[in-house]
Image (cartoon, rainbow, N blue to C red):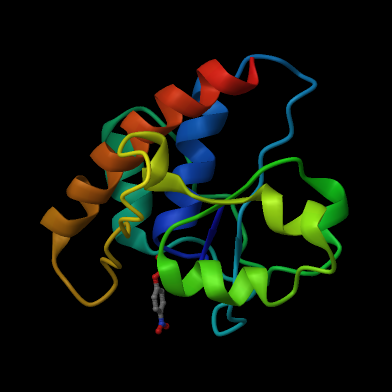
Length: 145
Ligand code: 4NP
């Protein structure tokens, strides 16, 4: 799960998907395309909305997306079109490129919609993001299990 800062959207996506995946063979992680917040825990508003839904994301630590992630993961879900461009720019070949998917295309196929960045907004933006990611992760979990 990839966003810009790895403190708002992708930590939520990681926590939500982990809560739905019960196979120990499935490894879920998140990263940001920028390193501004590397080593930090998720934004308190993401921690809070996840907690409201029974998910604890407080021990996650932000990290930057690395080219090696292409070797470690089968699917790379990005939150918006800007993340898509930044992640695709690191792809080494067609196989890498094919791993990268806009997460909202799982619920709105082909529409290339962005998960809005809630960082500069209020708490309602985080609830909205949570709901979108929850729906998308329901589809993802069916595909990967
Ligand atoms: P995220 O949100 O990409 O969902 O983690 C952001 C977090 C921090 C910043 C931008 C977006 N920032 O500019 O610091």
